[in-house]
Image 1 (tube, rainbow, N blue to C red):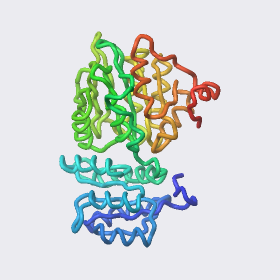
Image 2: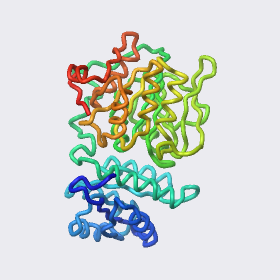
Image 3: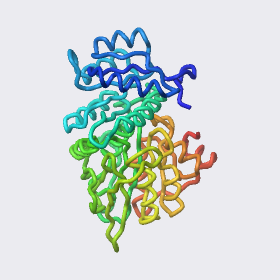
Image 4: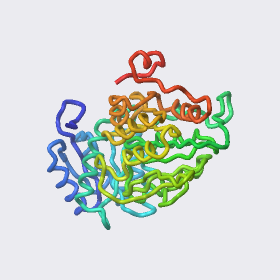
Length: 376
């Protein structure tokens, strides 16, 4: 049961949105959950500031477009003077998707969509409860990747992550809370000839489009939101679209992805579990699986299936994870061949893709101690 980390009480939430209807809907849905207490609402950042100081919420939900001060400006100020977990609630627009990514850069823990189209109030209620529970677990001194943690992207004495230009390896990566920042750091370290990479990041519809476009601008590899039938080839990163599952398929020697609808798996769509199971089936020992920061158990069993099929597997360690949920579950199952801090995962993946790839160590206490990796 997710409670406030301070004293095992319900999670105190402040709802900040200029729409009285949205405030009423959000507060009503959240108050029905036994683990959440809505301590107040605010129609703009100025009133929100006063209520934060008076009510001391554990998490706030924050709209982007508001009067007197936009949500992004308020978020920057909040993170500078009174840092705390924030879940951004944004509209389903191209602009909103890009702004939501900027909000994650500014310090928001999660982003989600307001109801619209096939995305119902009931869908929103389920999603926002999970996101608030995840945000409440964040130790805020590791809520984002600090600049000093990032390795240089070029120059200096760092060994380049080079590999052969032809490879049949497939990288499969799953992430949730904190994954936007983690994936940004990870992919920026991939060279242009990195093996084909498939990613499931828990993210609402259309935000994945903006996320992929931004990564494509800053990475050496090609990054795009996956479309049904896309070829899985060296140097290309495919991100599962929000609201759809992505699976690896094979026709002869050709890998491609299939984008499908269907029920949520572990409360998620896209689901890491769906991707990992398909990679275990069609790529087997030619794959490397990685599970990053996130709440819940999505992908843990799938990573185990990958390892059983001969794939090499990695889980992010607790210290560098924003929420040590998904990696912890994978480690507990014995699905992770290696447990590594975020800044060591890209080099390990590249090494595994070479012909002299790293051995797949068992997750025993002896091995973890030998490699100075934290245990659960």
